[in-house]
Picture (cartoon, one colour):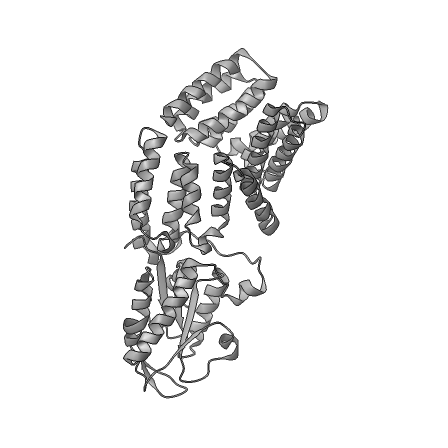
Length: 455
């Protein structure tokens, strides 16, 4: 199994009679002469179904292929109800990257005829060399169009309802992809070895070597690309994250998590216009998909960074940026109080803002944030962000006993310098209004761990 994106082929096998015309069609020859060569030339990995479908309930492996494959070619020649049902499942799961084909031996049903399909000719059920070449080129052109973008929605569902949510499932949900899952595990082992390098600079170089080994990123598996993107994030390689996402296929660029992470990287890199671009991405996500803790959390971080920059310059706009950050974090926490991350940031910034109303709001939110992180294990957790939240809440409430208890666990669980930097930034905001000896003892410890991870 390679790192190439999967193109699943949903079609009959062997020689099958077309009941409407009486013609016997050699589907194995069609696959070998046209479909498989087109997929391979497009740089994709062809996977053909291995089960006959004779009616009844479709088996789970078929659902898995239709839902999870990056690309699908569907042959509708026999007008089999099962095939139409399966294509309906695919069109519900993916807005694009589905290529329907059919032999022009009789008319296909009206509803399916409206779908953008590729017809091909048969000579008494056989695909001639000339027609095979034409079909191959037609499929190849459609696949290249889907790979290189800009994407064109081929699903009637997504054409009718632009905001219809795509299905995004992990490959582990179906046994049919276990070979691919094992291969992804091998790839993740390579990424883990790169992330284990002693400095961010070495980690970035090792990860870039892995990226170059993938070849054309447009035809790489989506899971591989996302794992690489997140590994760059762990190495604080913001520029690499952005450049990598620039080369994603359009179908992956539209993924919500990819858009969130691209905005995060732009905000962190913060070259000219980066922060404006990050803000535009997140605001568009909120408009399209509504709010969630991750999206609002990134929005809050953008405004918080704007606030710190404006405050450093002495700008009168700093207070407005602070209010925007508080508002974003508060919305993120209220959208799902189980996610404490936006909540603790809202509390920290409310304390930074000061004033009776802000401090009263901080006192209202703090117990709910504490409850949220306690449900995750609190100080007993091994997750960095759980421990960071416990530390920040302890500092805010001046529970120094708890702060000292959780600090070593937090530093041990930090795997990337940017994680420590995020916590440092929050504690420095608290220090600006509550400069205590205990906090002044904690901050150097975190700074030393940051420098260790940063190399």
